[in-house]
Amino acid sequence: MSQSAIFAPMLALAGWTFAVMILIPVYRFRAGFAGQVTYHDFKYGESERVPPQVTIPNRAFMNLLQVPVIFYVVCFTMFLTQGVTGAFVGLAWAYFFVRVLHSLVHLSYNKVKHRLLIFAASNVLVVIMWILALAHVAQRS
Image 1 (tube, helix red, strand yellow):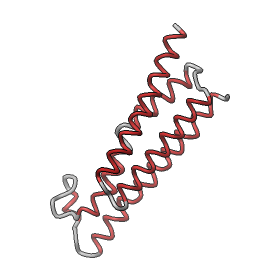
Image 2 (cartoon, one colour; image 1 turned 30 degrees about the vertical axis):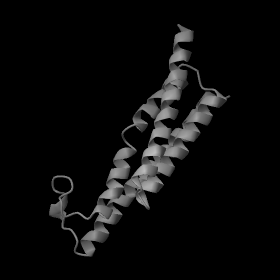
Image 3 (cartoon, rainbow, N blue to C red; image 1 turned 90 degrees about the horizontal axis):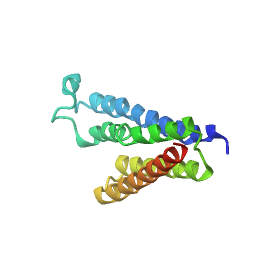
Image 4 (cartoon, rainbow, N blue to C red; image 1 turned 180 degrees about the vertical axis):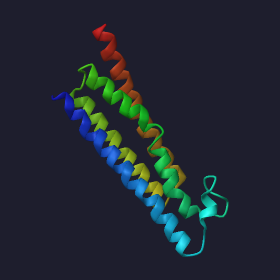
């Protein structure tokens, strides 16, 4: 297995993150043109006047910048220590797909129970990846 194979799911998740980021101004401008908000509503983040549907892309984007940070770190760790295996890349792809699913639920019908279950599944995947990374690094010592 090529060690660089780990970059494909990493780049895919980064690409998805950028796609969700693009939704933020789209939703905000739409709300602005509809007279629901003004630029003052975003002076200190998002005021209480910002409709919930306008805040969701921003929250979905922030979710993609929180736990996924440790996904990127574990992937780089395995690449740098030459520990990338087919199974590890499979876990990375699974993490990517589960995070996309989480975002899609968040951006569409937004049922919290479903988001929670998907979020928990993504966290289990990244914990497994870290356990594998720790075992790999310990084995190299």
